Image 1 (cartoon, rainbow, N blue to C red):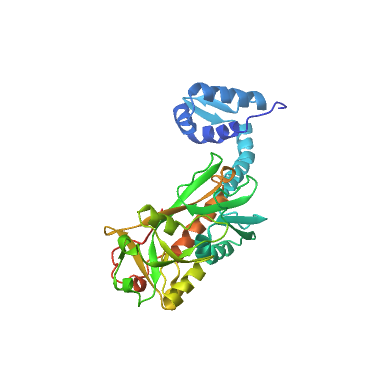
Image 2: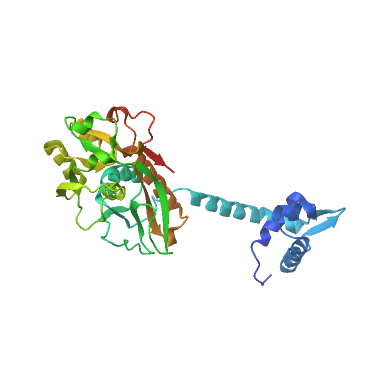
Length: 321
């Protein structure tokens, strides 16, 4: 018994003992009759014992085969249990840093929810947020646990996996005394001459809400450009500017602003968002768990709030995959 043994053949011992007949055995293993015979021959040669006696079309275990199975079964069961546990979240076991690249208008609303989700899984990773690099893709090294969040789809290389998270309706925050606030929704044609506080987060990609609006043929007139969404919303609150954003800042509604969806010919204007990561992490349980946390975080902050969308009943402001 000095020759190496294909450990997959140990499964043959258990299956043959359980199912007895050749037709049932090969059907369960998904092999041919010749493969079964070859496997049996290798087992018999390795253990120098016939292991199974074929009688009346059924295999009967020898005493040595039964002894081997009594020792092999716990080992195989342990391996199967170990493999099943890989579907559990290993976030609590990872060490190091979780790096997230995102424009500020996406990272600001979800950071708290993301941290809460990580803590619920006892994650010890240090969370580092980075601004999405201007006119470029973030460097997601294969050895780093890192993701990028931005508009979907991405123009990325074959080494990068991209996943769609959902779509969100674009709207505007404005003061109740703004003339456009009287409408349940605001047609894009009404935005041509309004004063807008635009977002310019430094080394960042262009704000997607503004970009999508301009794709519909409307040139936005910027009254002021600010470095963050919170600065823009504060200017809207004080100076009566409009700010393009998803319905993700309820604290500003409590401070006196209202939110209205933007439409084109009666249809909501949306953009899609998703995230990317290096293909090294594809199907890794940690990345799967992180994706669930991301979806939950976005769902918590970008949700339909009946009190803030007067007259828009029945409209779906956010969709999740």
